Image (cartoon, rainbow, N blue to C red; front, side, top):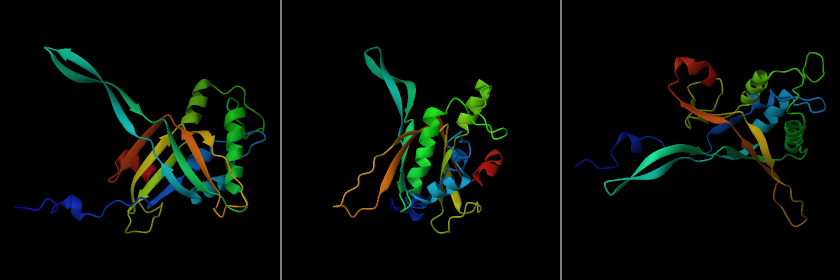
Length: 213
């Protein structure tokens, strides 16, 4: 009799929770405002200061039906989390807080008036379609890598899977507690709402190859 442990799944290396990278480049580059300027370097600060990310669950809802005295269940709707939380480590210059304060200011004050980089003024004539496209391009990506290879964004051999969150918007920024009694480093928990999520893994299809790589 073959052992239940003698199979290809258990002989493979398990996934490790720390072999991942955060990519907020597409999110940051879509944000700018009159008095709130988000720079490309801000994405690097956030990408490199991540501690952990907590992803929401996905589930389905069902309703009972009865026929011939027997209860059955039918699918009614998909119910998925519309938010996720990322924990960041703050540095001595409070660069993480600075970036998120700028993002918070933009998304809660300047949201309806995207900034035009051409003439330096708000573009009040932007169409609803342009607003929708710009909003959904605010993408946050979690990349998962092969634990046996050094993670390299340009090396598709080490990149195994990715989670892309589209239409991301800052929902909340945790508080900071200062205390003479504490020896802990400061961290910030940041929660984002999103419109939809996409999971892809190797092998990539032709249409996904450019995006995934």
